[in-house]
Length: 72
Image (cartoon, rainbow, N blue to C red; front, side, top):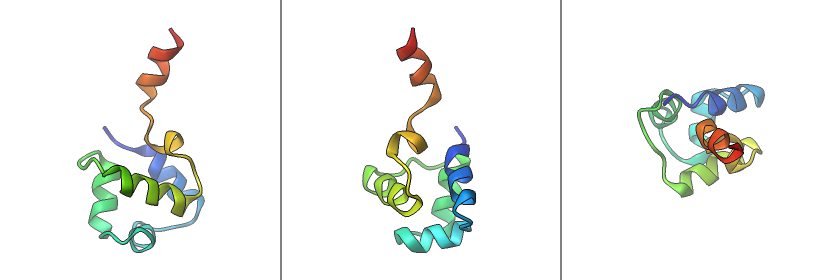
């Protein structure tokens, strides 16, 4: 599943994939794979990404389907 929330948060900070990758010490390809939904990052990487972007873990990585299930 694509992570459009990550892509949007990165764009709001005016960061390229390379900028974010350098900030969290991974390759640009890793950030690209996360955004495309081809790679599930570790919790430590998720936290590092959230800190670099100034957002919460839930804001970037909580699936919307889970929100809908909890509301029912």
